[in-house]
Length: 272
Ligand SMILES: C[S@@+](CC[C@H](N)C(=O)[O-])C[C@H]1O[C@@H](n2cnc3c(N)ncnc32)[C@H](O)[C@@H]1O
Image (tube, rainbow, N blue to C red; front, side, top):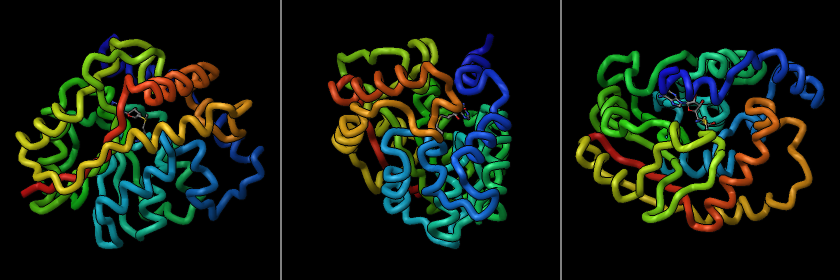
């Protein structure tokens, strides 16, 4: 199995659309007019959920005129939130074709279906012309990608001059090893954490000028600590995508951040 097949299989080794829509119905949500707060426990697939997406949006300076590419868009929660809160248009790409299908059908139940679209693609080979976007956005995807020069190079290429990369990712801490499984990988074979310093060096070498650089590990620690005592998953939760093992994956992610084995970084860089 190739590295990409392993990653796709990790996120969705089975069909998800029917089961997730059934869970959305069972939660009593209407079939139209859904807001990002309705789906947030399910569709914001990163530490600190919707709150982190709001923080990154503010840092990136997105407004109605911004054309955004979401690299590794998951089931579309961040893209829908950006469209809903600012009026911008977002194109999402994701390696996991089943996530793109689910992102599309969930969007049809919201108020922003005409502002978002999703298509399967590899972040390392983006199917867009040079200079197509104002913002290239990514959250909790780079940890599955070892070839960071290629990832950031592709994001740089598809940005207009003066465009911004905005990202939120887990980072390695020198001398520390994460406990597996975590939400992005069952073991070290598909986990590629870089330190914040190494990430900054490759971004600058790619040609980005760093405009904002925030270690948000403490916010992550507080969020994970607050959720540590929860008795079970919410009716709409990421276990619907990842299966029953998600409880252990999420608990390990929380412990890795709380105990300083993994950090969290949010940053914005500009294409000169
Ligand atoms: C933890 S989820 C994050 C999803 C979304 N960014 C969010 O925050 O809700 C990681 C996503 O990265 C995608 N991914 C991993 N490697 C990728 C690659 N090389 N190209 C595109 N997507 C990738 C996975 O399919 C998965 O949907």
